[in-house]
Length: 113
Length: 118
Image (cartoon, rainbow over all chains, first blue to last red; front, side):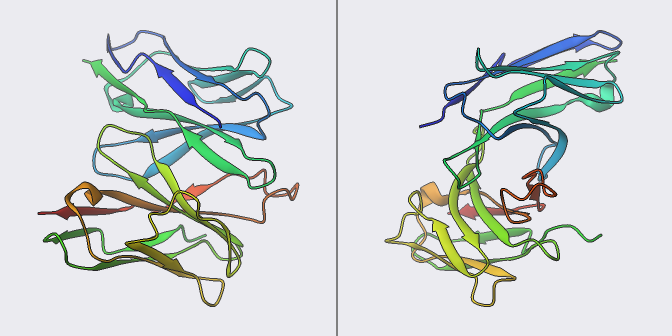
């Protein structure tokens, strides 16, 4: 059974700092890994999806990496802004043909102006 | 392209009452998922549909939860009777048929329904 862990649970940084969010998963047989953003009281916004054959994906100030063999993914946010404050969730897509997402509990990010 | 639609956005009920949530996936998406997200937790899969068939409902509390997708498009999730611990956000997601190269298996989520059981 896939299990996903995110560290840290909460993070507070001053505006402008670069930061890294960590995600680990127990079953390396994944199809892909997705990073999501969730604002309070809102649904999930997909940020990046990394296929199992890829090592990283970039979108603007975001860069996500994937190391399947070690069961780890990181989300790097460059030059953080107050608008980046949200909860970031990673999810491993696996399940022997059923393509199901297993989520971590998320990292709550606060960027202080 | 319209996103995943869900209604209602908010619902407050008393315990032992029943409630239903509705989801309309992105057009052309064959697979539909319902997730439950309790405050402070990540979403947990309740049920997965492929067209109008159930792929996996192993985590659905079947004594009180039911879901259907009769015509393979929109779906309804019902809770009867509700318990206090059912208070959560219920998220619907959809994707193209998993495994097809064109889809990349990316799941798209709706805004969710926030349920409060008093």
